[in-house]
Length: 179
Image (cartoon, rainbow, N blue to C red; front, side, top):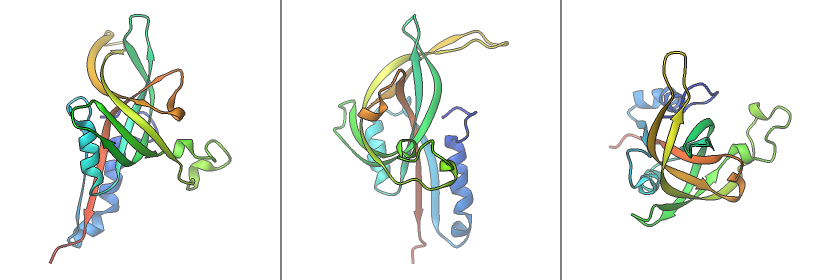
C-alpha cells in the first residue's frame, strides 16, 4: 500500500479509525476498514463507487517523474477524500469529485496544519494504465523495474511537472447494532 516515511500513511489512517471506533465496537457497533490496491483491482472505479455507498473513501496517489528510459520514479504522495464517483464498467475511466485539504485556500498559511480548512471540491478523471516503475538502488539492493497498473489522475488543479498515479484506496464503514 502507501509507502511509509511521510507524516500521514494509509495504514496509519486505518489504524486511527480502529482506535477511534473501539468504544463503539465494544457497544456492538459494526466498524471496519481496509485498503484496496489498484494493481490487483481491474475495476477500481467500481470499487470506489461501491464503497461510497457505505462511508467515506480515501484514495492515495504518488507523484512520479519520468526517467530518460521512459520508466517513472515515485517522489512524494498525497491522500484525498472521494465525495462522488461515476463511470462505466470496463471503460478504464472514472470521474471523481474530491475533497482535497491540500488545495484549500489556507494551505501553507499560518498555522494551517492545526486547524480545519474549508472544504474545497475538485473534479478529476482517472484513466487506467500500466507504468514501468523504477526503484532507486540502495546500499543493499540494486535498482529494479516493476510493471504496475495504476490510474492516472488528471484535473485542472493536478497538472504539474510530475505525473499523479492513484495507487489504492482506504475504505471505512460503521453501523449501529441491529436489533
